Amino acid sequence: MPRLSDAWRPNGLCSLFVCDIASFGDPERTDLDRHKIRTAFYDGLRKSFDDDGVPYKSCYSEDRGDGALVVVPPSIDTTILLTSLVERLRAEVRQHNDVSIATARMQLRVAVHTGVVHSDAKGLVGSSVNYAFRILEAEPLKQALLRSRADLALITSERVYDDVIRHGLGLVDPSEYHRVDLKVKETATSAWIRLPGLSAPVVVIPPSPRTISDARVIVSAVPTAPDPPQLLAATATVTDRPSGLDALVNQALKIRQLPSRRVRDQIVGELPLALATAINTQRADDDWADMSAIVRICHGQPNGMNHLLRVIRQFVGDSTQLAELTRSIDGLRQA
Image (cartoon, rainbow, N blue to C red; front, side, top):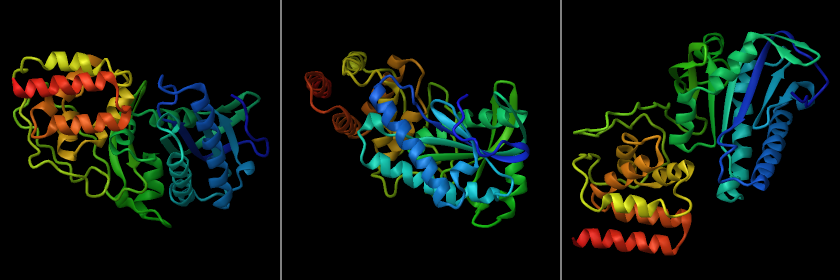
C-alpha cells in the first residue's frame, strides 16, 4: 500500500484509526465524482488531525483507495480519536456534502482499535490491523450509516470500549454507544457503534418475514432527522398484490435512476418515518423485488403513493417516464 507519511513507523501497542468511504464504487458515481470525494476526504482527514493537535505528518498512514489507515503515536490519548477528532472529521464531511451534487457526496465509516502492530518494508503487520478492517466492514455498521443517513458512523472494538469508553474518560459518553454482535469472514466478535451528531444509539432492526400482519416497529431508539413528518398510522398489512402493481413496478424501473439500490435507499430515507419503517421490513436484494416492496407498501398506506411520487420527483426531476408512472398510478386509483 502507498505510504502517506514517513515520519514514524509503528512498533508495539498503538491506536488505529481506519476510515472507509461508503459506496465509493457506486456505478452512479463518475470518475470525476470519485476524484472530488478522495480530495475532500484526504483534505478533511489531514485538517482534522492537525486542528486537533495531532499533526498528521507525525502519524503513520496508508492509502486504501476508498479510505485510509492511520496509526497514531503511543503518546496520543485514544479518547481524542473517539471524540474531538471524529467530530472535526464529521464537520469536514458535512461541509463537503453541503456544496456537492448527490453523486459527489460521501458518508464515512470509521473504526478505532488498539493493539500491537509492527512494520516492515511493505507496510504494517499484525492481527490488530486485520481486526480493525474487519469491524469496519461489519454489516451492522453499514446498515446504521445507511438507515440514519448520518455523515459518519463510528465503530470501536470491545477492547477500546472496555479500556476507554465504559469509564467515560474525557469527553467520552458511554450512553452514545450501542453494542452489536458481528461476523466478518473468520472474525466473530462484539463491537460498539456510535453515530456522532445523533443523540440516540442506533438499533439495527433485522428484516421481518416476507408476510407480516403487523409491521409496527419500535423506532424510538433509531436516530432520525428531527421532527420528520409522520403518517397517521405506522401499521402496514401486506395482502395479495392488487392488479396493476406489477406494471407500476416495471414502469418505475424504467426511470433511469431507480434501478440503483443507492438511489432507492435515499428515496426510502426521505419518506415519512412510519412509511419508511414499514418499507424497510420488506426490502429485498433483487432490484425488482425491492422496488415491488416499496410500491406495495406505499399503495397500502394513506397518501403513500403521493409521498412516493413526491420524493422520486425530488431525486430524478420531471421526465416522460415519471409522467407515465403518475398516469398509471392515477388510473389504478380510479379502477
